[in-house]
Image 1: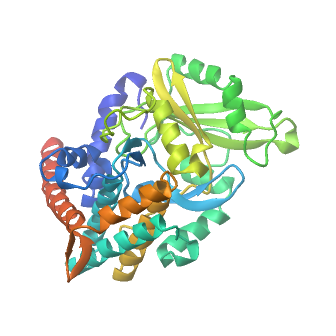
Image 2 (image 1 turned 45 degrees about the vertical axis):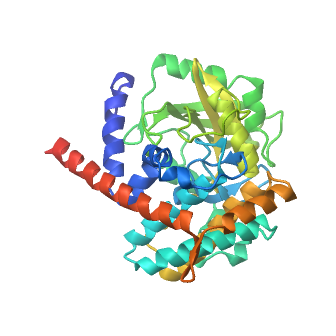
Length: 396
């Protein structure tokens, strides 16, 4: 399937609707708007107000996973910062809890697993605030397996996965669509800029004097919540000598206004691309150092090289032990990203706030977290079924 630039939006809207209808978990991942509408309701306003720090803003399972830095080191971190704002850290905890709870429901696990999962989430998050950060060897087997896989991956794995081949071309088809002449001209113009050259040559096995050449480019139909935004894949050759030449894939992604609410009077960049990159530098330094804010004509975009080690955590089918272990570990990852922005006094105050309103002797998770996740589960399940009904009417 190929799509002319003028026909993209209709095709993207259809594809987004289809993706979100595949499962309740996919619907939660793709619908940030519903989550933040709930936060603005009377129920959402009962959430404790944490210190104003950079938060992910869309902290679900798919936005956590292995991330590599420019030196080749790999760790589990937040991997998507499109919604990053200076806001309430409790929002990241609730969003992660909702994502895990939806995965648990999709795995047909009993409700008690959700209760235990939330307890372990809070324990893991508080441990990170106390300075006991996450360690890969403490992660559940499912997370360690993805991390081990990431460390073994090479360029050909990324090429076969993203562009279906290792040959120096992007195949036009289901995922990649033709560019307009103006888009292609703009992409070539961007990659002649010295700032972009420095971004591409910053990896440990490259040299600042290496040549950078655009081999191919295409519009990229990718993701779910990002469908409908400007997005391009650019295939680059790097190297000054024939034997040194290597290929890389650059993702150019539109940066839109964040749906996540920010703290009043927060000092954030007004430009959305700069906001996303600064949020990444604060929350996920491995990723932030590999990103560059830019303008694609008048549209703010973020440039990032996709590395073979960058993987998404796919945990749609969980056992009880995996769900509980993943909750503790991933909340610790988020807690560490939050904690590095706080001094000791702020961390102590936030720990005290987290410990308030425990649900009772049979549940150690705070009542605000339990009530939030339960209500959001019900809201999203209802909205998901309505989404599926509407989609079935559209295709029939």
